[in-house]
Length: 493
Image (tube, rainbow, N blue to C red):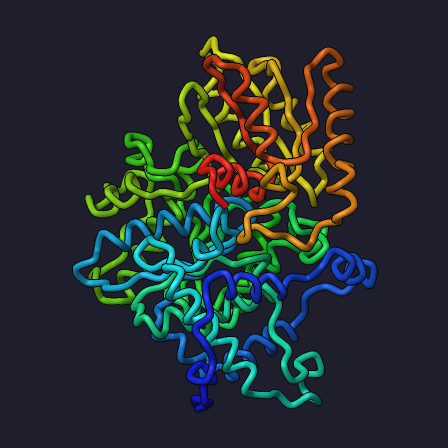
């Protein structure tokens, strides 16, 4: 049942995109709060889902209303964003029968609007602002029973990610999207996207160890959380090369949820084409996207039957066109800037670092140009990641220079407005604690290396440009670093 509430927009002056970003940033959890929650041992629980259902009611929707969006729901540790991008691109080839495709992903690189896309494009600033304050004002004008929702006091709002999830549903409903793709934020079982009741298909990309505080320390615990998106009657698909113990748990979860789980093989035909997203490892994500798109198109009645999920299956030309035209910035992305070649892949887990290293090697190993590494990882086990990166790349790829930076965008000490992050320690960032520790780690591995520590991305770019000769720069680690770099290369805040 929809809740009719008055809007206050009519009595207020128009609010800008910068107003919306400032309000959104106020919903971030600060570093002290995050550390306090971790110390308490509190993990995500069912209350997260109940609260999202209540927030939805507050802005005028029953969660069953979202079924009309025809949602493909995707989770995993590595590759879920790329899988979503491949799936979207395939569905776009059926634009004669699917009018509007929504895509919700995270995190963003340059602009928060990247998280909410329609037909491949981020929504414009005007629409973002208008819809943002639609949701904001409706939450202001409504309330929740505090006996059931003690944290939802009058005037309170969902946290940053929950708010954006809520906003995405509102945008896609108001824009009349007839197909949507949702990438899970963290895990699945208790993720804010998991209020989706009847997805057309569910997908699980490669499982690995990440977000252990929220999901657990073992692959079995993580798989249990990821399998939480499975729904009765909604076919589920996963890549064929899952860790054995994780796959066993996914199968158990599918049985619990009364649905099927299909392992998707790598399609031989994909080995003969150039995928739109670089990296040999992307072939498994593209194969998973084929299965998801096929199931979705069957559910919508666009295709009469599912494609046969066998290695020797010949894919329809529209599928091939979608996979070859897919784009996903920040993942195996090459940016040519004069004599500088930026090789960019946000990799923040052991598996991601290993996969990215293979792509980096294939791009730079045979060239005589100077080679630079630009790295940061502010919040995870950065020293373990950099050690693994060193192991994967050397001795085949030797760096002439290594630069460790914070994620701060500009030399002024400021972030681009869309990239402001309150969930890191301001003191650690200002004192370059992580960066100095990374330098010490690298020098233990390679005592004669040339290593620099800088306070911001703009300064790192200046160090690279000072070479005045062809340079290849490997950029990896945090996606916040990748986003800040792309913003700084554009040269505008």
